[in-house]
Length: 121
Image (cartoon, rainbow, N blue to C red; front, side, top):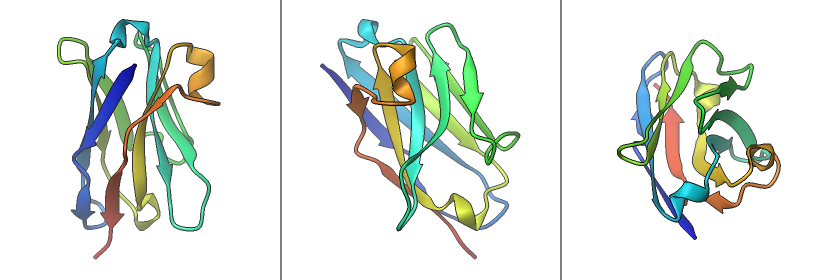
């Protein structure tokens, strides 16, 4: 089993920045990909960004150039740096992990509890 714990959400003004963290514990050697999803009120959960154990990254078009995913293997933590935030980025952000990279964008094996990000003036 793998446990994921997110932190770093909050309220920020448009144009501001936030950094989310996702700390992993448990049988983490089995994980080959991690990422972030988000779910806005009344909308489906969507994949925002992914990072593989090799460091390969992918981003949704809506966040390219504004969000950056990174990982610190020594701390078993994945980060999401969010810059130039917009009101439409408001959502609950979930950390996710998968044993197979292919599964992260479809059926992740593990989920965090989510952290709220609100972008508003």
